[in-house]
Length: 99
Image (tube, rainbow, N blue to C red):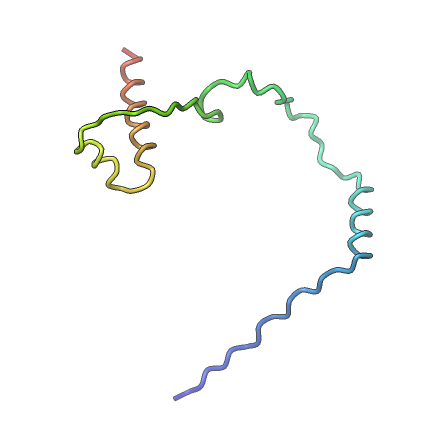
């Protein structure tokens, strides 16, 4: 029977001194190599964003009576069943909007 030995755990990194932290803060404050962001459009006014991939639709809480088997079908996979039910309803609505 062989005895397994494990190497010692690595030493914890040394905490930098206050002087080192202040020097690093001064270096970062004086840095002029900031990325050029002039080509990024201004997005301060997000009211112009439409619904879709990057903006979540407004949700409303409702009380809804469903057949037990229908609810069981969506809930059988666990958490997220309300999201799955919402997706199924959305798919149904979108199919009928295109008529």
